[in-house]
Image 1 (cartoon, rainbow, N blue to C red):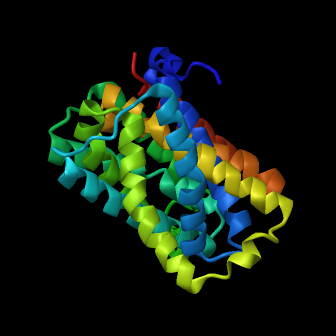
Image 2 (tube, rainbow, N blue to C red; image 1 turned 60 degrees about the vertical axis):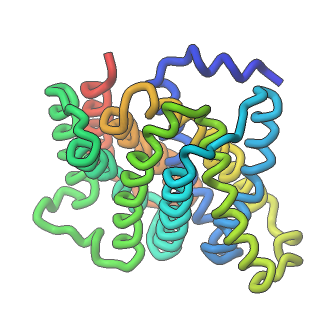
Length: 294
């Protein structure tokens, strides 16, 4: 196994950018899995796959799991992250992966405002210009050039995905302080455990586990991707990045998610791609670049 301590030398921008791309691809993987299981089952299986990976890394790094002085923040984070996953996965079931990616891109706006109001974090001029530029790109993308129309908010799935942008912003803020004091790897592991116990407990009585042994290969690969990369490594890297540059600036990198989603969803799921997607996506990238941490 490579020396995992090397991630400490990786610039936070690379950690956050890599994570955003991985999370953009998770929307496609989620669509694949939802044809064979319920949102609750997908959530539980992601936890089930992620936890052994996280514990394996913890043993290798000899990280500690001691949160006696932070149990309130830990439980709050666990509740919020469980709510976030359930709301988002349910939303994806009723909308497209591409639509999900672009709706989720409003998260940095929500996060920056919440960080300013709750954490009193400052938003500098570059970040503001970057947010404005990327937001124009998002509006162009979701409206397909018809700026005054917002049909992307007309379905239950879209509304739920939009709600998950708010739950994610809240989660990032809730865990900021504890991730600065504790090992980020230990933080995400400790937060997943209570949620996983609850969801898997429900699945014991409500799911047909035999069906999971007969899943197609692409669904199994999608599940492994969601658990190992989307859940375990992704959240570890994200928390490390947030602890180093703050919630507001970290949120800027989430603008990469819809670009990653579109790049995979178009060829794999056959979702549409047009001139407004290309131009709007370019503005999103420009905004991310301009608001980057120097």
